[in-house]
Amino acid sequence: MLAAGQGGAAPDSGDAGGFDVRHEGPWRHHTVSANGISFHVAEAGSGPLVLLLHGFGQYWYSWRHQLPALADAGFRAVAVDLRGHGGTDAPPRGYDAFTLTEDTSGLIGALGERSAVLVGHGFGGLTALNTALLEPERVRAVVALAAPNPAALATPGSSLRVDRHGRMLLAAALPTFLPMRLRRHHGVLLERIVRKHAGTAWKRTDDFADAVGKLRRAIELPGAARASSEQLRWLARSPWRADGHRHRDALSRLQISAPVTQVGGQHDAFVPVERFVGTERHCAGDYRRVVIGDIGHYAAEEAPDQVNELIVTASSG
Image 1 (tube, rainbow, N blue to C red):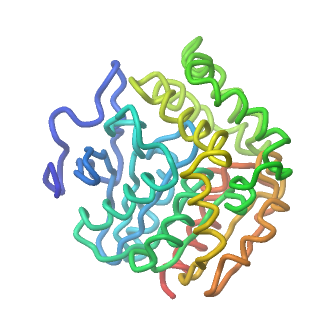
Image 2 (cartoon, helix red, strand yellow):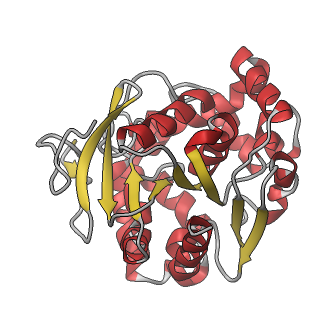
């Protein structure tokens, strides 16, 4: 159900710790109740639903270039603060693949829709792929940006778990270490992560400075650093836990029926496009792999026009 009208926000939504995530722009803010918690969303346009799921350490604002473009193209674009991030509730649990899938499916219903096109970046991309796998009736298409083959992260000993991701997963396995590091010195570690993995051209822009400044404030919101860390922590521990076995079993038994577009940046060293290999084996429907030249990890912000075109194409199928 909507907790606020289409044209406004609930009085207490999005404002915590002195930083208000309800930035002004060609969108409207409101809250939505789904899967037992309250989600903050930014919405623009009307038409078929396109639900935008952000990545590690981010919040809805990473989709600021997509919301107006998708609205102009005739879609209802909704960018959500995922569980624990931005203006959304931050419960102590629920950062596993299955609960995040339930959140996404529940959001689609709470927004009054039967299905949606899911667009996700990084962990949001993995959640989009998992939702298409586990809740196929809810998903018309998937656009996954900088999201690796989901089976690679679910498999003990895979190369994806022992390189740079493996070091982050190891840090995340300690329940307080990474959240403390992310909050320290007003989010400077998050800025370093983004700066290291962004493309050169974007880093020279005012848009980059604006985005990084807001990310550093948002990661200090109550629960945000822990939420981002808990997603990583689940990935670190899941291969040896019952829910991780259940996830691998689903990946081995089921296939994604919705069309999938997997998008990578040519210079993305964090999720190189080589990490996409094998995703097509989980897709029963159309599968398309796109590499955007001269960008890093943050395609939606580094190459918004190209990403918008890919989303519109996927959403119009």
